Length: 345
Image (tube, rainbow, N blue to C red; front, side, top):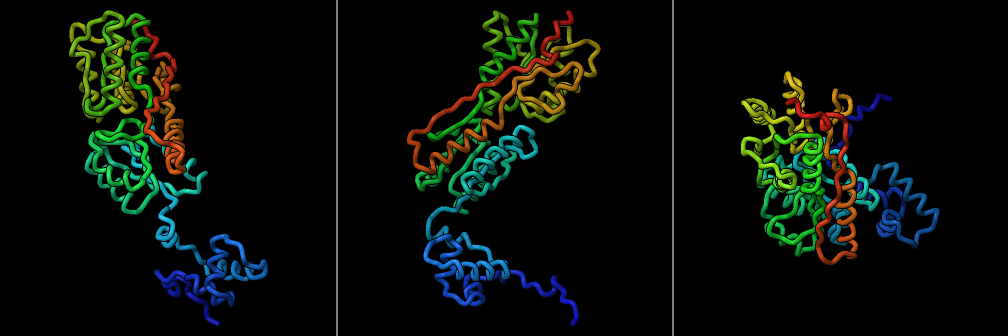
């Protein structure tokens, strides 16, 4: 007998149906449905025959049909800012772990920090009838979500609050963390401290700048405009800002970096300097402890943020939550050496 070519024999788009399973097992459609959905009323012997037919045919339950009957998809959407950002790895993993524990599938995508892309992605997920959304917002106006919220789509915002709607949000203490980091530099003798952050319209960037200003004001240190720089976090812009702060007759003696991407570029710039400059970054970075000196950071617990948001989402779905809340998780200062350097002059 000639060998069958499995690739040529396969007919794509013709998945086995419950009717096929019923015919192979010699039972009715209702019996197959009961076995597939774990319902009672089937003898062990009949259940065995049906399961053997399912395994032989490779049958998979059509969950889209269940959606039509029950209105739930057992899936949630996660909209991130940037899938390549290390901060979102543990956050996404925690959301997925909570989703799996609740028998739900996680679908994620990236807005690339584009408000239009965020809206497009969120509405596309809603069109696919996800039960809930965890959103790291790129925009500052989320009224487009109002019809979905009224329709029962559970939603939790993460890292930044929603704009113009009342919704749950889970974030870090960005203000307090930045204030503590800058106060740490001040405690080690620094008075000329630079701040390099993200776009000022972004909630986290604005809060961290506010924390920087508060720490300087608490210490009675006036802040020069030349010591602050906010904008896109691409290496070229950050490098230019750092080099300007580190030059001139009164250069800064320390830098507070507003996020992990800024910190990486500032580390590279400082490695080229002839004098030692103190550094504290917001967000931890990979290999920070292996550098010399190690990089002192204000660390967020991204995994805890994701877990808290996902658990909040499923409590919404279970109907155990009523009013939206703002949940602010603490940060912690990790000292490794760069933030403890004294001023060079």
